[in-house]
Image 1: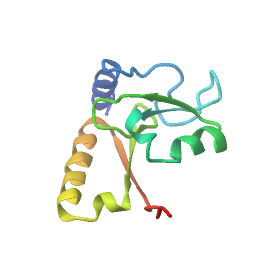
Image 2 (image 1 turned 45 degrees about the horizontal axis):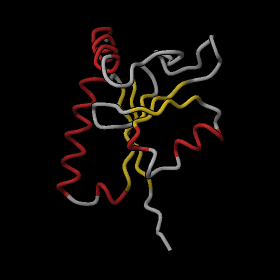
Image 3 (image 1 turned 30 degrees about the vertical axis):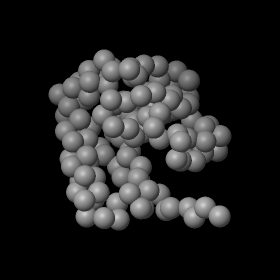
Image 4 (image 1 turned 90 degrees about the vertical axis):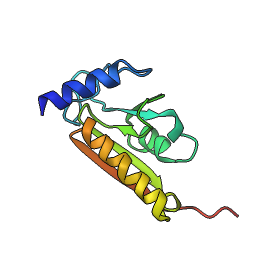
Length: 123
């Protein structure tokens, strides 16, 4: 368990967006600022209202940066959330890619969460 966490910190910390500040190791609020930080891949902000909700409705600190492993939301040193739209997983080929991606994330994080967003129809 500690080996996976150390490996994760090293891989993430040497990329373009190092984990720093008050990101909680166990996903709970830190004592220093009483505010949890979530690191969000820059590719997630274009298609999602989640970042705005995290900041404004829930009062969380959100750091936007480029994550080298394909995106997502790092919620702690041990956990990542991968958000996908419902249409992104509707075919067999994209479902297989998603399974491969989730397995890859399981090698880096103790906890991997999948959020499936309902597609919004544009009028």
